[in-house]
Length: 102
Image 1 (cartoon, helix red, strand yellow):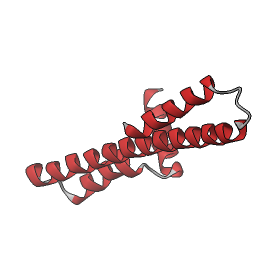
Image 2 (cartoon, rainbow, N blue to C red):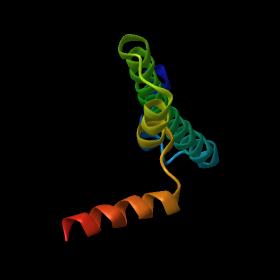
Image 3 (spheres, rainbow, N blue to C red):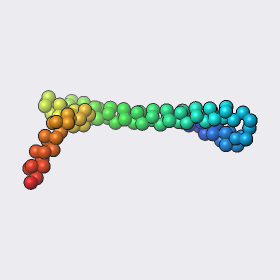
Image 4 (spheres, rainbow, N blue to C red):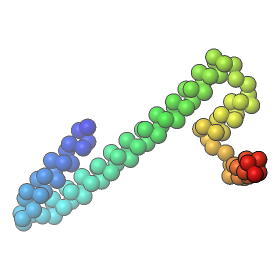
């Protein structure tokens, strides 16, 4: 949380003292603050993505231990939930499902 509090204070300072002759310092400070905020958001999004991937793997590990899943089911779940399928294989599956519906 401290990452976001420091830039807000500097932005407030810039808005109140915009008429000062040393405006270049405030503009550089503002640019730095926006960069810092952007870095904070990117870090937050990456952390959330990592947590999601780890929870998928933890669920798979638990199912392997508890339910004794075989190797083919493990591979299928890894492709569906974690890695994703190759585009050719994905299209083949979608087309075959489409043909079954017709």
